[in-house]
Length: 186
Length: 196
Image (cartoon, rainbow over all chains, first blue to last red; front, side):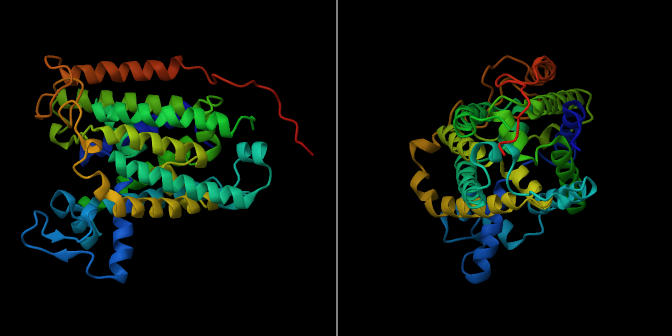
């Protein structure tokens, strides 16, 4: 159902190359902030305000949305922008690909085999760990200024020093943690 | 036009992530436990191919050098990487694969995305802790590349080295590494007998 590592790698490599050749390097994690901003702005319209003095034309009382001349505030004010639509389109592409390989018909869609091998049928624990994992991943990605896509893949392909520093940190934490948590093989 | 490209390139990336197996937390955890290196080999090959094509395209004048966007290096990149690595291992997802996996109907991925929105909100609320501190102190002059890439004015870690040629050479190394890496580095290839 999945491609060989060679075909999968070629397809992924072409996606990263085409993105930088046509527009800019692929990145994902910023858009979690933009979606948060959109939700927040929907309940409190003072979160993003037009401000002619700001470089982007928008400002926010939140220091993070306001940073770099309000560029995130601007993206929240205009969600139909490249970065945000790109991430929505990832979901679209993956949904079509998943549908074609029957992913929606799989019975177990929340406990990976390696989870079952180590923790058995414990859905509540699995969902809790997925939520905690998501929290740590996005907090970490925003602290680092990028994620696996933006720092590791796009960064290293551009020979970015930051990409190597990020990859060192990510694997240094991830490999021992995974070996400890999932000591039994699936 | 930009929005059309966002749709086409985003969809291509989503399809590629799913078909390469990156939407499977089982394969991500397999990679991180060094038992199933399928994704590690695919990622190394992808970085290598993208790097060679981009830098060779720049030299041939076919790829706009100005499309490069090199992120700033600072202490927080390392600490953020550690935190991300922790959550990556716990859940089996990262931001892009989490979004893609949720879209294929995985419920744990959907919960991961919810946790991600909470984590990003927590960072927005606590950004002021880090702003202007040593955590944000730049390393190697900020948005540096390893060598000097002609056509952009980013600082270079090793000045005097041609960044584009280095990029092609490193890309070739990544491709070679993808082929050289075995299918697994740990664990045994035993048949698992179901517990019941």
